[in-house]
Image 1 (cartoon, rainbow, N blue to C red):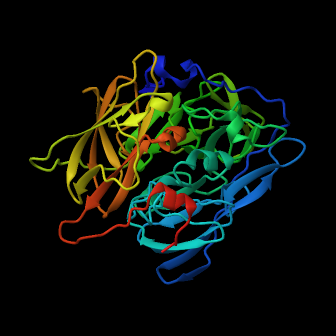
Image 2: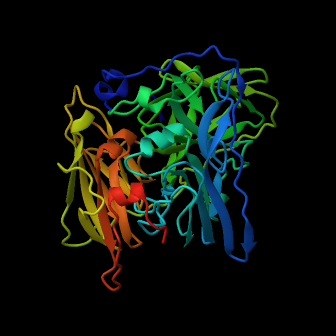
Image 3: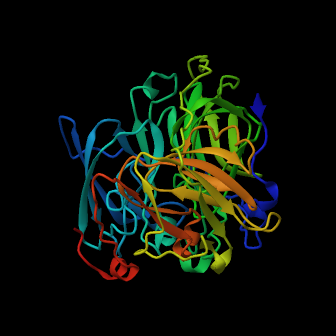
Length: 484
């Protein structure tokens, strides 16, 4: 079956919002799509790999004329792509060369919190550094690195801090997926920006309900072209926007196959002609251009705006049929006698709340025992006609989406997730299990909403081993302290 709709509730698409900024076609010259380079290790010692990641200022040629001042991770803009392999022990030296405090949040990684996870309790001050390490023990997936220094997450991402993270494993490597990075395995970081005399001005563009820009900027490229040299191309799509929902399709309604979501490979391939992705979600798709000939151009669209062109070149014929079963995901076994957790996302603008409260960095809002599988009902109380979709994100784990208002989930939601878009007036049931101790954030991933306070904290605890945490205040995070 080929699905030909966006699945979400059309009345609450972002384009109906009073502050919506539509994308505009651009008349700037076309240029090759930027493919972020791979971050190289500092050293490798057996099963230990050492990396340095630096948050830095830079300049990037985005529009004709003067360069744009940008921020990036070990790059002038966005960041070098980080590749992690399951089972390897990683040592990361995190350096801050920005003029303000930041953090390094490993969105989607199954690591301890709050320090290794890189939430607001793990500040790295200007001129300072922090060292973390972990053994990667999760399946292949596409994750990302972004800052999380509440209340400045949105502005720092707007300035450019966002890098893809690719996790690999031996099982996924057996599947017939394209995996030649930069050739047939391509990061697609979706963002939107405005420019003022070629510069970013977050304050001028700020919207409390999520800042939007009129230009589609893909991997830091406006009006980009990717030259196709293989029949099949894998796109690792990341919605790295502050707010925008991307409703993706090709100009010729070209069919494509979704193979993975946030937490890795789906149980089976899903055939689509349209794909809607809310903030911070990741979707991996394979596009087969076998019906095209050299010189053809296929354009990726969001709504009615072209955002990226695929120019078909010469390629070797390679007809590959994906297996019907890609991945076995066991049905969750809920911990006996456990209570359902109810969490509520409410409001818009400056009235956004999570469970009726604003975020407090020194307050633990919930606790859940490591190893327990607990049902969470996540509700969006916005008006079903005039409200908005709130994308719910939970740090420290991947969850399974079980139902939407008691009905089936969307066809491409049967894999592991860490972000789920919740329609207005909807309750989404998820099965949540933590495997590592820590303090973790859960929040709406519209970045301005989390900065405004639509965020809370959960402690994943081990009853056999007590872990003590120093929960710093927002004032301490912003105004100094030590990095230990």
